[in-house]
Figure 1: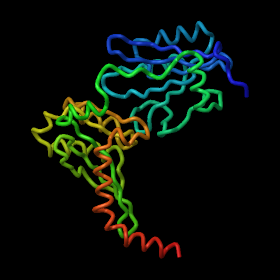
Figure 2: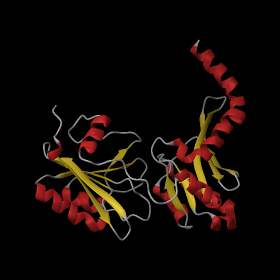
Figure 3: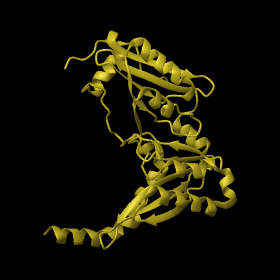
Figure 4: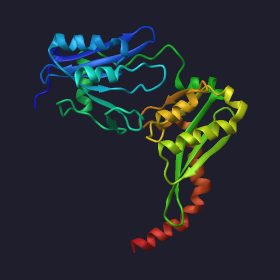
Length: 277
């Protein structure tokens, strides 16, 4: 299938100045399909107007910015265009949408490789996003260490070959580790209750917490985030497949596996070996 030439490719950024929220409309004229990423509710009419001028329908709407500081226009844009809504798995919304898994690829009519995308953007003069004027991620973690919590799951198989999941939370400033709970079924409701229990255990120290770092696992639902945002804690979701963004928590989990859980793995490994034989 021939790829579209640059004069047929449309990539239009939209910036909502009041909250500095960026959204994008992109697609190509060849296959007559547009998609919108992170639409703001006050810009919905602008997306629709551009699509109507080009005579191309909006068929997909993505929302990756689920934090409380973003007023999403996804429901209104989907209603006005009939497009398919795409949200991260575990978003916890009550309207029809396609739940995207980490790393899942959505195609808008073209089987296209990442290198081709890079070439199209390069030829159009669109380079990598510039480095922001603020601190780097490492500098941010160092400066805000006393106000940062980080959460992640660690799992272990017991002697009955049942997998158990533990929610681990670490305070960056003191490296104190909290075991928020253990369960065989870490769904959204359980994780939300574990978050409430954690804040109760922290007590008055909750007032000093400003940020919570977590990955994009489906167990971390919007209701989980709401427990922390209600206390004035901002959620920082790490990029997909980027464990280094939550390196301190990942390091603690690695230590648990090597020094604690590793001692429990020997009988399990033996049982598995016997089963294979």
